[in-house]
Length: 471
Ligand SMILES: [Zn+2]
Image 1 (tube, rainbow, N blue to C red):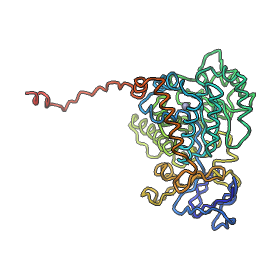
Image 2: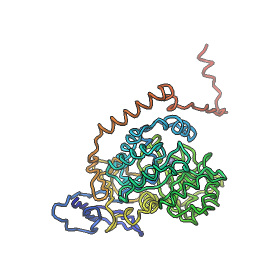
Image 3: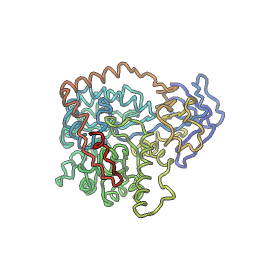
Image 4: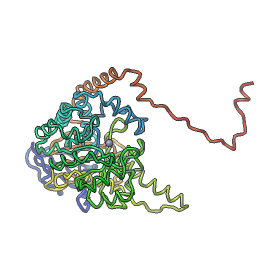
């Protein structure tokens, strides 16, 4: 694989003390970060990348993304969670064939790499058969990123699909300890007092794999699910709770006490309505946080927007609450540095990968991102590097991306991305979905009714313009 050396970077190491190193070289040899320092000697044949004026940081980690849904990118821009459930779960989602899962995953995977997201959890809950699952795994294996396949199937109860022999067979065939493809089980806990999900948790325990679950989702999952998981001993440090936005303090205590973490999808929570983005509550309860994008059926898969909206939501709530008390906030709690940590270390810790990725440190796997764009007026001056990453930089400033020592984006262009092939596959999926749903239903799904907005009576209106023009 050889060696790559970044020269003269501003390095955000994101190590435990958040060391920032100006004017520093980072040497990568094979899969790992070999050396960090000033004026390093590179081995012969090393690829040199001038990082002057740029920020070198760990690759970002998205802990919850329904990658298959990327085939319908942007379709649900004006949806609520209710419309998502109706249209994606009950309508279009049912019609996904294995090749459609493949097309969505490949597109989503490249999209993540393009944005500097080197590890993505594919929260893959459209796996109606193991042929679908094989297609999902094939797609993740075909793109040079690091992925965790979170296996799920919304068309069945988790106690059903997880008990099927072909599921066990899939796990033993496809999950082989490859560092680039991790595994989780993905299902939700409805709060049914008979706790039918118990059987699926037992399978996860038996396989020794973590569970990721949409918890605290308004109108869908609530404190009962958390209580049942806790009472049966299924809340572990590896458990990832997605959203956790509509929960009582008792549930946050149970999550904190058992060492689990929460994947916050701020853009999703704000538009879809799972509940207010809960970073304020998670901070209060000392619960570890990672960030996620949820689905490209609404948003794109870049964590710059996650960092930005998460800071905005946390601060906005604080100001709003203070104003209601006729008070002024003079200092904000949530800092840019913290969301950069959540986008990197937060994810590596949540996934149990922190010994391998999440920071730029000697000996770790080389998953790194160079933000540099000499042509952009937004990329200088870089005075506050954390603030720059969270509020200034964007996908177009991702200059170089390295995953496991391999350059997957260079000089702003993805390496090995066959756009024509990926586009063709996705177009065939879209054609298939329109054909099975019918053009009318397809249009209707994309354009839900707009509720009427009542315009408040305005006491300053005294001129009747319409009456005048009508005469
Ligand atoms: Zn989700």
